[in-house]
Image 1: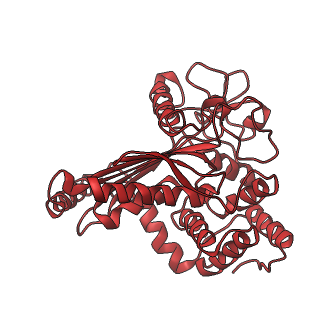
Image 2: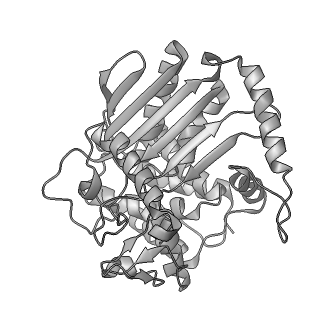
Image 3: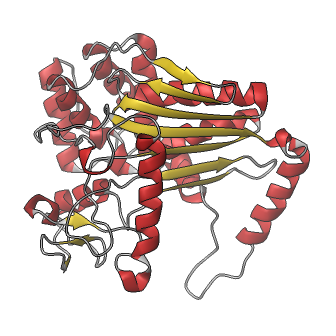
Length: 359
């Protein structure tokens, strides 16, 4: 187990050694470790070595000039200047919040960015302002559309955060694939098979080998196959790709740059970097915020009190698992797999930073 404070200090120093300002290093560290606290281990410190390698390959600018290149009172397009998505995304979401404060709603499309961590972190920035937050991003093309052998889409997550009053907020954060690539990486590290419906091999056949991607296979859209409505997951992933990248001027579809540094960038780009899309809506642009939040409490309580199926203790609402994970991990520490610890030790050696096992 590793205490949050220990990992935070270590990751902060890594980003500082990469050349990030103190403010940007802190922002990036907060986003990254929010994933670990939330139990989304695939997007936490397990990804740190990937960001370091992208920086070494010259694909991440740690001193970006993040700027608005097009805007209206309620919308903006932001150029991330190849910055860390962990930094670009919160700044873009802040612009959406400011516009929502001024005119009731704010929508921001981003181009020229990189992997931005967990989608839910950015959507939840709206909650303290009595706003509903939206966050989505495109990603490395690892997903085959329904009936296809080709990898044309990313895992393309969607997150929506909705405030309540006495109850915790509703926070839905999910990939538009049956599973995120990071979960496959965890299975690879554990030496375990993937569940049926997560991936297919290079010929389009269902596979349980978590290494299938490296052999030319693909992740599958939410649903897994046509019989289980994979066409709906395909539609969701396509919608995210268009809103985040066709709209912003980022690379879309198979042209999206890969997260891993050893894969080459497409030699015929159609845009700049990865794309994100953020939204913020003031609740009181629709009805009084207190009134709405009171009814959200009622909604949450009714769903949570639903009679569970046999073998289940209770019915959860979106956001419950992550909230409970944060409470437990803040108290007892964050578990890291051995290969992740090995990667962190490798980063520490490279950056000449002290790192100890089991903190």
